[in-house]
Length: 457
Image (tube, rainbow, N blue to C red; front, side, top):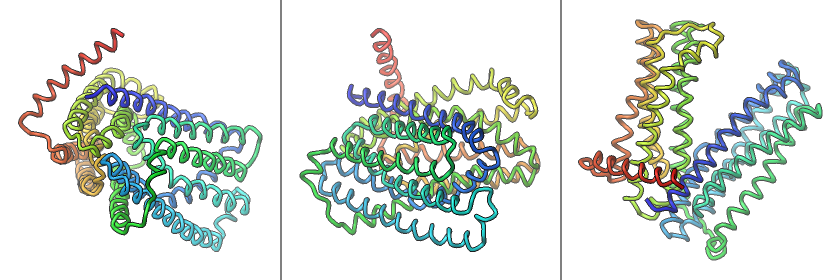
């Protein structure tokens, strides 16, 4: 692995860690300000109103990713005209999705207004409608950010793109707190969010284009029907990802509710939430290697791609093992403190979720290959199949074994995904089966040597 790739991965990792910290801080710190400024009931009404633009935002799910990944792969391969055409068609498709979202939004607002939904809210009817419309505009503007981020990946400055997104979240957070401290309502709050996002998108796109100044100067995009169809087709593939996640997470939770009751749901979800905290580290690793993997795939350097995949599959598994050891030794104790000892769980239930973490480490790292190669359909189909099977297993097992059965059903998902995803990922990378573990050993030695040199420095 070249020094530049290693440096970029480390930079991406640092930027991803910063991004996660900002998101967690925003989620934890903003809530007290909301409750203090507006009151719990009013804040609850606001959260209900935000459901509308959040659902509408799903209309873009996938199309921005499809356009962005296609652009980077074409650019890295040196097919600059096709990359320019992809950028043009990507903007066209995203704009069309925004128009579609506007029409759907107008219909939703008319229906809600007709049934006097806003009249029943604690929030003034006119303020509620105005805030939803403004917030919707913010969500729609965000449709372009994925494509703009691809400019940074193509310039091999992904860390800069990730860091700028984190600063956008930070400024949105600060703008929100300022509005709340000034005692303003939801309309002003929504306007502040819109202004921050509007200014950010302009700056974000311009800096991204400057990084690829020669490309945008020398290559003008043209209408390309084939690319349009490709982006649309792959876009629907990416849209399947949140569907299987909803089936898996909400489906298994619903099974626990109907079979075991509401208290069992509280136990099941709190255990899953705490044990899956380790999985956040896997996401950081994926975000770190994804830009470099994708660019090297575009260049056709498959041996380098294979090496990056092997090394970080090993790193993720080691992190999973350490995380499991920590959760086994102190996690059970911490869970009691976290829940004020109001929820009782067994060691068997806890340990079943530990098994899921190890298998999740294998398939979650392998999943980045599908995204890097812009192959969403294969991964999404497997996710749907495994999610459905997991829900069925959870239902049947919960009937006989209670919460242990539900946990086994959830764990079954990660096991199935690991055995299905990894072989396909290796096949996509044309990795030799016989020498895989030999390469792993060599990569491990190289990784240890690299870390020793860094520690000495």
